[in-house]
Structures are given as C-alpha cells and as structure tokens.
Image 1 (cartoon, one colour):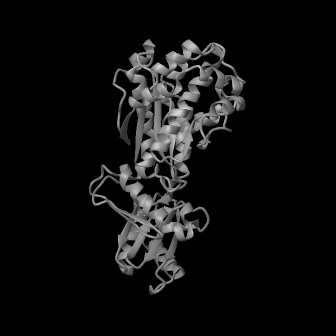
Image 2 (cartoon, rainbow, N blue to C red):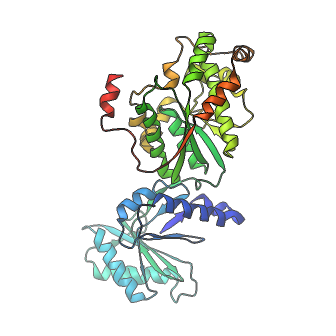
Length: 399
C-alpha cells in the first residue's frame, strides 16, 4: 500500500499527478512481470502475485512522489478474519517484552465498527491471545495499522519512508549536462526530485577520452534511472571543438569558450527535443569556471533557463547526497574527463564577457557545432544496466 506525499496539495491536478506516479512505478518495476499496479485517488495498491516483496520495496524507495508505503495483507470485510490476521502479523514480529498499539483508519464510514471500536476489538483480542504483550499508546514497539475501505480491510505492521518529492514528469522536461564527476549526478537527482523529466547530454573527446570514460557517464545515468524509470542519454562528440579552441583561444579563456560551446549545443538539443531548461552541477565558487563572472560569460549564449540545483551546497554536502544515491564511488573512479583533459594551468576566474565574445568570433562557431551535432547519438538507459567492464578498476589505475 503506497501513500502519496505532496500530491495531497495538488487540488484539481491531483489525478494527473497520480496517473504519472502510477506510470513511473510501472516503469521502475518493469522487470517484475506479475505485478499489478492500481493507482487510486488516495492510495496506490501494488499486488505482488508472488513477486519478491523485498526487491519491490527496494525499488519503490527510489520513486519520487511516494511519502511512504507498507507491505500489507488484504482481508475480507469480516471481523473474525481481521482478528486472525492481526494476531498472525503481530506474532511475526513479536519478541518478549514488546509493546503494541492498533491504529485504525476508516475511509468507508458505513462499516459497522468505527475506528475506536475496531481498535478496542483487535487490541483486546491480541492481549488475550499473545501472553506478555502490553499496550503502549506513545512510541510502542509495534504498530498494527488497519485501513477499512470499501474493497476490503488492509492490515500492515511496517511503514517504510519513500523518496518524497514529486513524480518525475509532472514539472516539465529538462536536459542535464552530465560529466563523470560527483556534482552533476547529484544535480540530476535533485531535479528529478522536483518532478523534472531529465535527458542527459554528455560531451566526450576521443581519443583523449576513452570508451570507458563514456561508459562511466552512462553508468552514472543508470544509477539515476530508478528515480525516473528510464532516461535518454545523448552523446556529443567534442574533439574537434576542443582542439580548435585550444589552438586558437588564449589559455586563460579555454575553459570559458569550451563551456560556451557546450551550452550552445545543449541549448540547440534542448530546443529540438522540447526541453524547457538546462541543468548542470555547478556549485558557486567551487572551481575557476564556477564563479559568478564565469557564469555570466558562459550563460550569454542562450536564453534558456540554466538551473543549478547544487549551486549553494558545499562539497561535503554534495558528497553526502552522492553517497546516499549510490553515485559517489562511481564518480570518483579516475577516468579522464573532456573538461579536465583540456584544462589550462591557470584559467580565468573572472573572465570578461566581451573578451569571451571576441575570442569566439575568430572561430567558425556554426560549422563546428553543425559537425558536432551530426555525430550525436541517443540511447535509452534503464535502471540496473551496466556499461563499465569488469576490468574498469584496472584500466582506471593505469590512467
């Protein structure tokens, strides 16, 4: 039994949010073929039909829009059946000295017992049936939740927190510029949590960056896929642009002009794919290219919103989230990145916009971008997919 979070505040749009959440849950649980998902107005019921409940619950914890959920047993609207099931569920978890309480909710007000009567009936039966158990109203060891509904009575003895947030896809569609680092996957996670459907764009520069570096970005995307069901991954070849910029632009402005190209390309792809904003993993002041002056010089190339979910977080806060979502260990694997391969020894921390425009005006910008876009490749990545080979650690040590 799945309970909704912020969806309770959505008023007339509530049905659309619930429908989207139901779709996302089905996508996330796509490899459990016998499941049946029923997304009703006030609860979602997932009928297991023999599927592994532990594996299903582990997936559900990653679906945004869920406040919490409980493994539940549905019984007929028969008091004797409820009493038997309640005792069995308490016995399953009971150890000597434990306390309990009954918490009944009744959405069907035509049922013959109200909540207090049901609490008294079940509580008394459990006290008589299980020797030594005691009632405790505040912070008991066990809480048996009973929900009386028109289609049955549902009993649960465990409540598991969900991911919260909004269902992915209810806040529009955006594009995340994903590298192989720590920050951008965290930015993606935070955008997904607010209901944004993301596509990933990744710039790679063979032969300076390896196939394994590209696969690392894909596997980071796969780490985020459970939160979204599936994610489109867009590969952009960037070698010619980086070589040209390195040859023709002063060293201090290499990073600024490179990032202007990246943002231009991301904006063109976003427009073509109906994305409403661009997301990235920039954190203010963390590196030279993430000062306000740099952001002004780089953002100049597009009118699309450029959103930075981790902009005000320090590195430790970002790492904490990365560890929580399972991307940290992968992010710190030392595969080369196209930004670091071509990084100048002393990039400008306060680049001037007019200078960036001047140096860029000397390049065949449109032609370079056209050739990069001609080599774009789009794939779809789902949760659980693997892209790095078994020898990834060995390859990384050689870099």
